[in-house]
Amino acid sequence: QLMQAGEYTSLMECVTNMAIFHQLYTPVNKYDLWGYRRSILANSAHDIVDAYKTALSRRNFPADVLVADLYNSVAKLLQDVGKYAGAAEVFEQTRFQYQNASQPVEVAKVESSLAHTYHLQANYKTAEDLYRSSLAKLKKEKGEDDADVAHTLSLFGELLIDCNKLAEAESTLTAALDIRQKLFGTTSHLVAETLKGMMHLYELKGKYDDALGYGRRSLEVMETVLGPDSVEVSLILCKIGQVLGNKYQYDEALATLARALKIAQTKFGDGHPTTADIIYTNGCVYLMQQNYDQALSNLEQALSIKEKVLGPSHPDVSQLLNRLGTLYVERVNFTKAEDCFKRALKIREEQLGPNHSRVGQTLKHMMTFYEMQERFKEAIQCGERALTISKNIFGDSHFHVSSILMRLGLIHGNRDSPQCNTEEGIRLLKTALDIRKQSFSVEAREYKEVE
Image 1: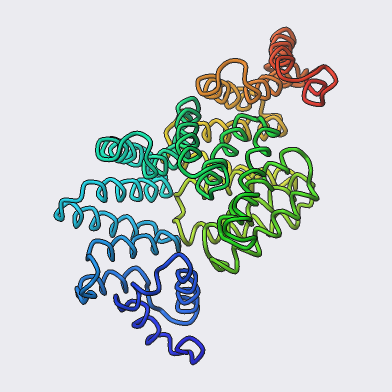
Image 2: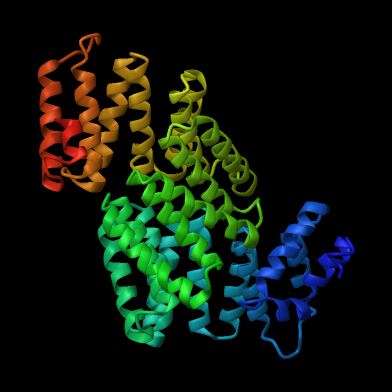
């Protein structure tokens, strides 16, 4: 009634009343809270983080509820709506509350939630330390084959993927999957959650068919258990759309992403990072299709959301800048392209470290960019650095390594280049061909493009 009447100050007072909040923040009703938050944000100057922190500081709590539980719910809500810094602050207070109440299991569970929040903020080292601390406590208190252990392992596996620790990520996700299947059977939404993580891992490895297999198993379970319009379904659809795009199945990819976006806009609104992720993926597929106007519109919209919510130096922003740089190259706007690539590289080196796979990804784009402009010396410098990073992360025989070798081979073989070295170019291309032969038949497109 307050929302319909446009009384947004009273609405904010209502949803930050801890007794009412406790009734609203449930697995079903929390989506209503998200909707109220969007209305308040669109129609008033109230800040949701400050409002909830003020409400907690008043300590006007329901008598039948543990104070730490309320802190925990507030932190989870702030995380849900993309207020990660505020969520981390309240999670830290929650951990303190549970420590004072001598509840080691709850402390461990909050550490897991806090680690996930830091992961979302790209604070990977802190997140990794918290996950390892949480797992040690949970295994000590509850044993190896526990549901909370599996939950933390599943989240930790996703972090390890982003940290390029792929072997540990696979063993961690496999352990989580085994526990969950043992405890809940193969049709649990928790099993589906871990299958989504496996899809992410195999996509990164370039094993797209395996990735789709995990993704479709995950989707089937989530649709059955949580319904076809759940938030979880939208997240899986986004990943499946991304993999389909990588497999050049564009129409199916766009249809899948359209469904994901409709769900996300309904559940999260237009200004949430998850909505931006789907818009970004949509833009990437349009870019692959060479529909540059639509791609530019999607990527700029996603960038605006991410910068507003996460800040201009977040790694997610660098991802969008990378794609925009690629788009500007295709549109022959080299000045804007170089600006995007340089800004993306600076963010990634500062936030992720100089040897991260995403740094190598940007360097690979810059190699191609400089080659197109016949700035061959700069192209080779970027390519050689990208090659070193990829070999260190993925090994000498990975698909990503072969792609960089192929590009470097062509640059060295370019007769217009002062750095032309035909012999070196042929050597690099033959090495790339040998790598592709290990994974593809001689008739496959991936093999023939090197040949």
